[in-house]
Image 1 (cartoon, each protein chain N blue to C red):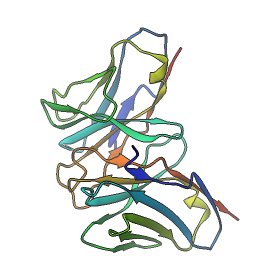
Image 2 (cartoon, rainbow over the protein chains, first blue to last red):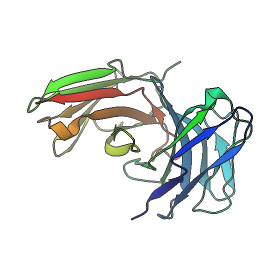
Image 3 (cartoon, chains in turn green, cyan):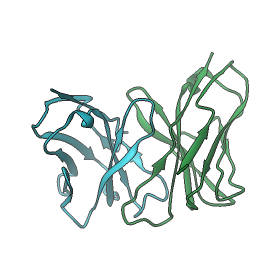
Image 4 (cartoon, rainbow over the protein chains, first blue to last red):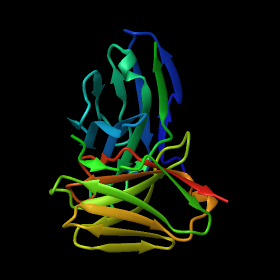
Length: 114
Length: 114
């Protein structure tokens, strides 16, 4: 069972470079989101989507873009990487209405910006 | 302003004893609460949740208690096992199903000692 797949798992960038973190889910979930995890900060929501063609900002959206052209994919774009974006990024998905509120997370993408 | 607070960064418990992880929240609009467990280099996985209309939810060794008047919830693990050693995140949502994003606490690192 693939679940939520994130690529790449590791990436090193130089300041100013751009890149895209990929996220795909095969569970036909309407809802997808991106979080970042920093030491001592927990998980913070960057962007989310409640369906194809619909995206919205979370708590820390600056410096990131997202799009949702299909139900399965929700890429996160860093337009001009900064050292402050060094973090572990998690993609998550769920059904729009769940009984438990459960989110399914990918394994994470560790990004270092030099 | 942190809306979900886990004030204990770490907790050490002997194997076989009870582990109690605490979480406080400030947003009165939160009506759904979840606990996630995270091992190193893996994504968080859902553990247990509770709706604000309940004060207790149980699943095997895991029980979550909710005190709405105190804006406090706790996760009890009985008995604690070595595999329970992980970081536990408390999360909250103001829409059933977490569809528009969960607000996470900073996490508590639980260490189960043999």
